[in-house]
Image (tube, rainbow, N blue to C red; front, side, top):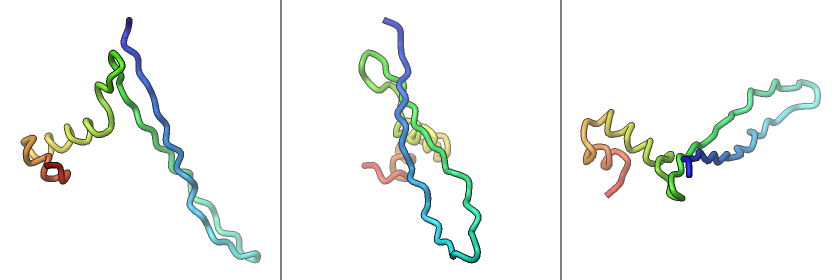
Length: 73
C-alpha cells in the first residue's frame, strides 16, 4: 500500500475588532495556519512535534540541549 499524506487543518477564529459607528476600523488580513502529518502504516511518521524537535536540534547542536530548550525531560 503506498504511503499517504494526511492533513489536519486547525481553524483559528478571527480576532475581534471593536469598531465605532462613526469611524470604521480596517480589518487585518486573516491568519491562515495548517498542520501537516506524514502517516505511514497508520502511524504518524512526521508531525509538528517531531519537526519542532528537529529544528531545535539544528539550533542547539544536540538532542539533549534541544529537549531542554523545549522543556522536555
